[in-house]
Length: 126
Image (cartoon, rainbow, N blue to C red):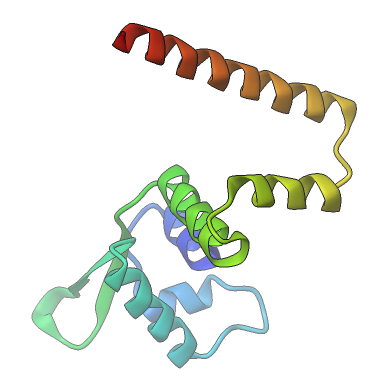
């Protein structure tokens, strides 16, 4: 996520060296960032092109928004750590986090709105 945040915050394409320079000390190794960039490119989260002159230097730019990236990352977390169960994922956070009364009210309100939306959608289909 930190690599993607660096790209989003920068607002323009960046080389691997520029991404590394944006990290606080101690900075990650070039090979580490290069590997992550290959993975992010393969997953279609970033695009890459050769810098002017067609040398070996690639410039990377995000293809997805923060919201889209977060949604995809959470789907992967749900699948990998909770067997695809939304119930297990939510239960984990309820048990592990200290949720304030205000946060709990907001969560319950979101659930109610989601339930209403689903019910209205089902009624419209009839």
